[in-house]
Image (cartoon, rainbow, N blue to C red; front, top):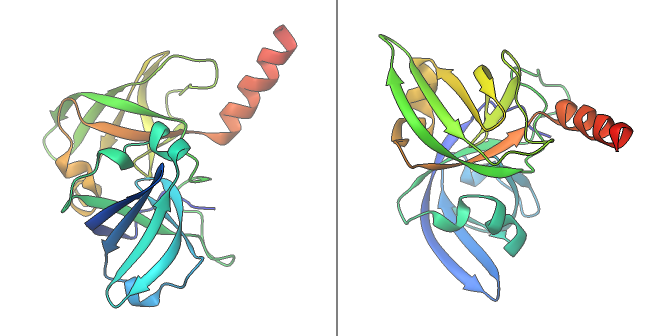
Length: 197
């Protein structure tokens, strides 16, 4: 379980294919604290540490993960938003984030607003792919509040701290990002769809 509060940025050092799996090796400032079999969110995707080597560690993304996320598009040197699982005695500073990415969205517009930034994203329509204004959404692992919402678009606003300490600073028109819609909203949408169907 995660909260969507990014702990650090990791840098992709290498990748290796093994069948349909992709092994990603990263370096970050807490690599030495990690343990084998530990879960971390990478751009919002929960992956398991399978190898540790000094300041670097390796995780594996399976084919299903690569189809639903932007991990397969990453290039060597890219910065990746990282969050370790929330400790049982921690605070929920963001919202409930599972690390199970629903889909990718495309950045359509970046607007600088005199001290903040607003990002507009387009995502596939669907009864469970929903946002509501002032509700929560996770973008590349970052817990955010929705500013504007319609069935295929939503926007979020970023404060300077988030801009500087996440990979949002690299987003531009056309950037593909990982989206996890609010789990409570998804359950409500599923129950309503079943009732109507």
